[in-house]
Length: 136
Image (cartoon, rainbow, N blue to C red; front, side, top):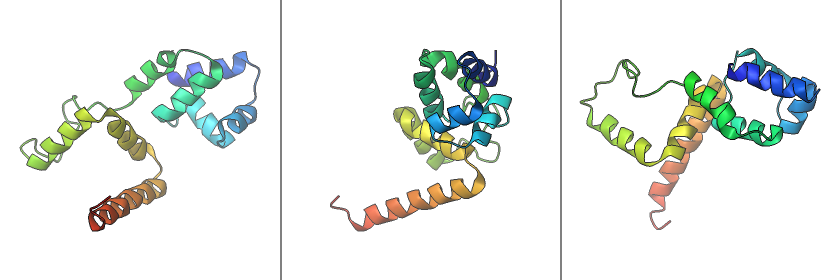
């Protein structure tokens, strides 16, 4: 059963409307609809919130999410970059050491373009600011 089907079934079993669920999750009803139709993929954090709300084991939903997200190990994931690029090797090592960073970067990747640009600008600003204040 797909993640979207599981989310819809869990909501239907509780006789909640999409609006009721949206209010409980603090999101738009249209977002709930997109998740339940498979038009959008929720973030890891959102899936965990769904699991908590529905009181189900998080793995019940996360295992489906893992199948939907691209995997770096699959051939062709980095189509334009060469693995000989030293910077990519450093980034890959960092992502392996920091799984939360990897999940957050995937969340940014899945955001709508304007929101993604906002968070990228925010990260860039924070990094530049930290370089100016090296004693932090």
